[in-house]
Amino acid sequence: EIARDLHDEIGPHLFAVALDAQMIGQYASRHETQFIPDQVHSIQSAVSYMQRQVRELIARLRPTRASELGLQAAIADLVAFWQARQQDVEFISELDGAEPEVPDPLRDVIYRVVQESVANALRHAETTKLSITVARTGDRVAATVVNRGSVKSAPEGVPGLGLVSMRERVQAAGGSLDIQRAADGWTVAAMFERADGRMVA
Image 1 (tube, helix red, strand yellow):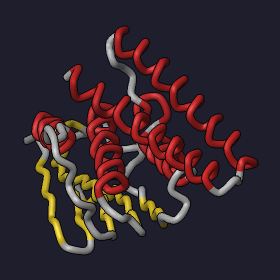
Image 2 (tube, rainbow, N blue to C red):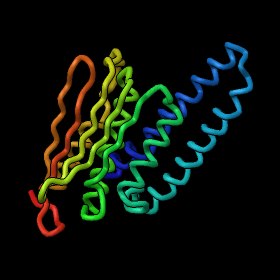
Image 3 (cartoon, one colour):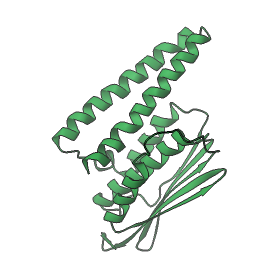
Image 4 (spheres, rainbow, N blue to C red):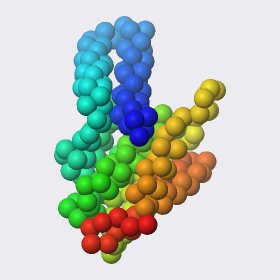
């Protein structure tokens, strides 16, 4: 559990810092130094966030942003975070099923699925469009992230823990996870059954 939360909270921000640093290098090579202070500020903000998260993780890794803000607001905050760094990506969110019926433990799981799926799409594909949907049909709640963009070449090294952690979270909540891959992108769909506001297998 500690490994999953470290991966989910710190990993995306480290990736964001790497993107900002890459942009600084590009601006410097083009002598567009007027844009560099904004990227430096972005790095400082991400590092400050990670420092806060480490303190919270030491204190016991809770609450998540979904618990603090609510699921809709947490996902909107996540989208804004990445949109500021990936301005060429079109983000679409449909979150009618996110509030208020989804219980707190399930909000956390859904947020983690969305968080990891978005980070994976931006890290591992030439993403042009990302769709995030949280929908409810009867007692079912489904979270779906659809990525459109060709897959980047896989780096060598130790495989990431993201998909494994995501599947563990979903299964622990009594849900199912389906990942469909295609040449032009992939779809991650988590489905949960609910009864009287409680998750059931």
